[in-house]
Image (cartoon, rainbow, N blue to C red; front, side, top):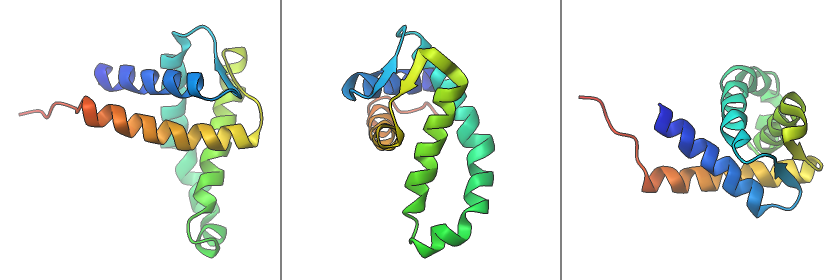
Length: 115
């Protein structure tokens, strides 16, 4: 679990360094941001996706990208000055790039299965 948390924090840091409109200061706050994003994605996001199900079906699932961007903006609001996202479009870009970087890191560092 700690390894996955460090990988997620590294993914947040790499994504923030890649995009100009997103800042993480100081760098070690990336792990805390990963924890907050994980909490938001596990608790709040399913409820929002359920409430937005009609529009999500109407847009063939593309509204999920908007929901992801809103979750990143919520995380930015919760964490405050340590994680700043310039606007909605940077939040959208952050969510897309974070997904790709997180997937790539998990491919190179797979989780060990319990016996």
